[in-house]
Length: 164
Image (tube, rainbow, N blue to C red; front, side, top):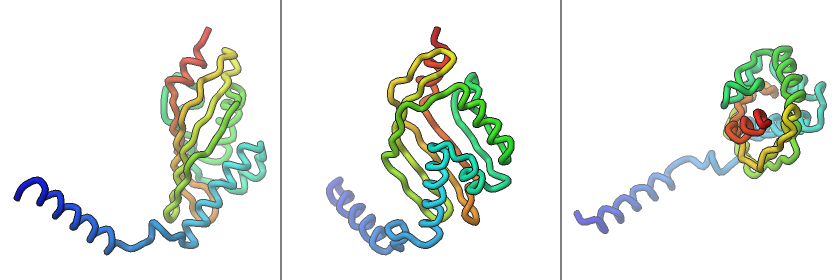
């Protein structure tokens, strides 16, 4: 079989698989919509400084993970509401968000992914990052966030944090 025949056969097989797959990724079931709404409400409460709203949307056993440069005091894993609120205090003492833009958000079942761009002002150094991308993977259980797994360009943030 030559390359053209192989490509045609592969495309036909992929099309057949795609057409036979359930359309769950293209429709929104109740759980998916509820998960999406919960994460967006949590993000809105956080952005508005509404700690009571955040607390209501947090599971008691919630886990917050920030991936990246371990030299930054807000990188790590925190478990439970009280511990997370302590971490958020450390974060807010060190960082001021100067730009935030959600660009894409997707949900499937209990999982929500959000992608966007942001800029930060690091309070100790007074340095501001350039705009960079972030990604979030969150999980929801019974209308509350149980996982907040945050990814950002910690190289850019670390450079601004340690600026002299």
